[in-house]
Image (tube, rainbow, N blue to C red):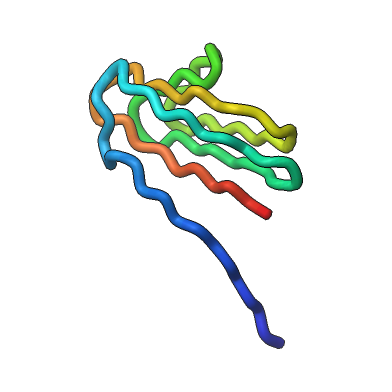
Length: 79
């Protein structure tokens, strides 16, 4: 059994400052999974805390804003 993985990595600042915002475009035919490890985020006005996750399958622009110090999150943009 052979598995082929294709991925694209885009690294944003590892620990963004409070109030800093990242825009992420989710293209048609792709899915997104976001998991908050530390700190808090606001994603298009929805507050997420450590341990929270969200998924999305509709094309859109996400506005991801760090709302505390030491925020860390993992975002998967999947095909």
